[in-house]
Image (cartoon, rainbow, N blue to C red; front, side, top):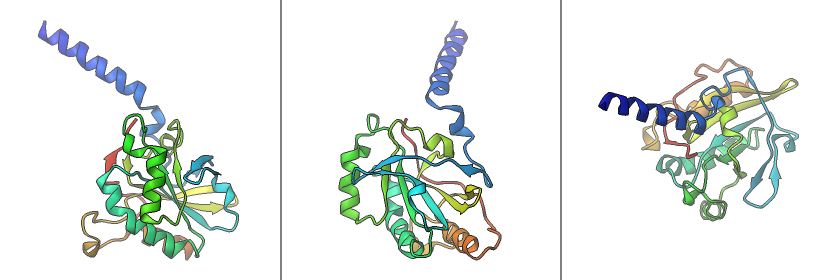
Amino acid sequence: MRTSKFIIAFLSVFALTAFAMPKEYNDGYKIGDVADDFKLKNIDGKMISLSDYKDVKGYLVVFTCNSCPYAVAYEDRIIALDAKYKEKGVPVIAINPNNPDVQPKDSYDKMKERAAEKGFTFPYLLDEGQTVFPKYGATRTPHCFLLEKTANGNVVRYIGAVDDNYQDVSAVETTFVENAIDAMLSGKEIEIKNTKAIGCSIKV
């Protein structure tokens, strides 16, 4: 009897998970895939698409949020990445993938407050309806996707973490994102194309 109850409970949880997490959530883009464009609302109320950026060489799309301590720990580093690479043609595009009904700290109004507090120099978009992050296969905040703008579309060149130490920027040994962008801009092969994103799970 206990076994039957356990199996029923397990199947119920599995069914709920299957409905909550679309297939694309686990698949998502791979290195070399062409990423679809999107249109999401920025904190200034304007709708933003990648195609709005005409004279760029690529984009650093970062799925991040207000509530995750890992995301907060990386905010200054993401601001620094935008400052370093925007003028070189690779701006940061930050996207909040969390459902604000599940995590109220990630509401649109709270996003505006956080961006103002930190002085974000990049768009901070709300993935309303959570339609974009599953296509990318983002699972954590923060989760980075480096796209190269080509004649054939926006090609995914790097997926993963910003660097190898979320706790202490002074202890970072490998700057995954910086290395990937530098290689992409110089036309060289990116040595490390995939890393594990360390952070909080996306709230659906």
